[in-house]
Length: 135
Image (cartoon, rainbow, N blue to C red; front, side, top):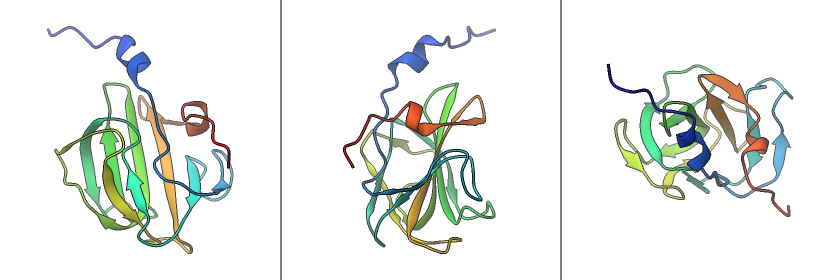
């Protein structure tokens, strides 16, 4: 069998904020407790938080609207929900900071990005991985 990827790949991931804006809820708060909400304006750029491959691009997951899921390595995924426009396709490789979507309010009551980081499929607090911000 092929050797499994070790945790060392996790260490190399350096995360960036997927968009600018005020945090409207944090991990464990509100109706969707699996990530953070970042307020913005319709059409605002949503960026890949780390390099990876798009494993889902669509609107088939109820409650997430137009959704993108990026696989970064064997351990980590990132989730970008409620977009107005998706600019990437499944199977596409993306660079950190690449524009992947435009912010919207699909399946939501306000314009905001719902952002999750999952480790081994389990949602974890993105604020533990994202760099500190001044806002």
